[in-house]
Amino acid sequence: MALTFRTHSEISDTLRADLIDIWVEVVNAGGAVGFVAPVEHSTVEARAFRKFTVGLDLLLVGYEDGEPIAFLVIEDHQFPLMDHARILKSVMVHPKHHGKGYGVELLRAAERVARTLDGVEVLHLTCRGGLGLEQFYTKCGYTEVGRIPRLLRVGADDYRDEIHLAMSL
Picture 1 (tube, helix red, strand yellow):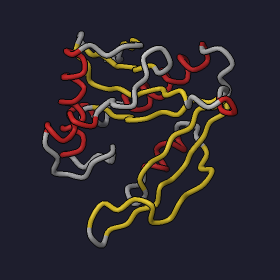
Picture 2 (cartoon, rainbow, N blue to C red; picture 1 turned 180 degrees about the vertical axis):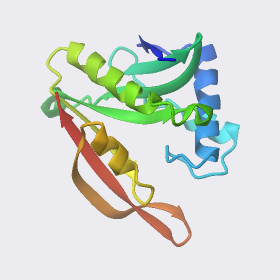
Picture 3 (tube, helix red, strand yellow; picture 1 turned 60 degrees about the horizontal axis):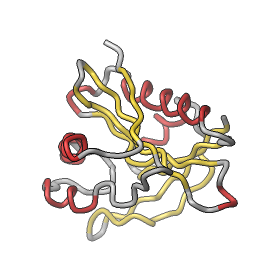
Picture 4 (cartoon, rainbow, N blue to C red; picture 1 turned 135 degrees about the vertical axis):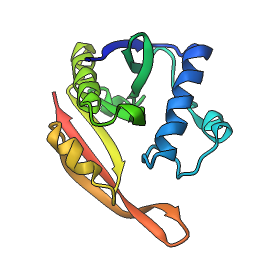
């Protein structure tokens, strides 16, 4: 079953709660989205969407049977020299739906949305090294444009590269 997608320029309390639940499930299943497992609901809730700017950023949510199961944020840089670019943040699909191609669908939907935004020419994102995520994004049309070695510390002696990827629209 294919997802249906909707963009939101604001996040209702109900949707926020649903997405935080997904976020916790993703992290605790080993996903690399801003936290390290195990993570508690209260930890994600305290930090989730705190940089979301109503009127500038867009939340893209994938729904299956009316329930949110995937999402990402299309974030405006709020910097004049980057008005032509958007960064994708918090890209995730609920773990019970992994392997269905929904991650690819989510990224394709983000491209479609970005193409409707006035003057947007570039999408970019970052991912945590050591998990093979860059191969997934490369298969989706993104190009690795750089990496910062050991920028992310996920454990006392566990440092990971932050990998930067981009796509021209």
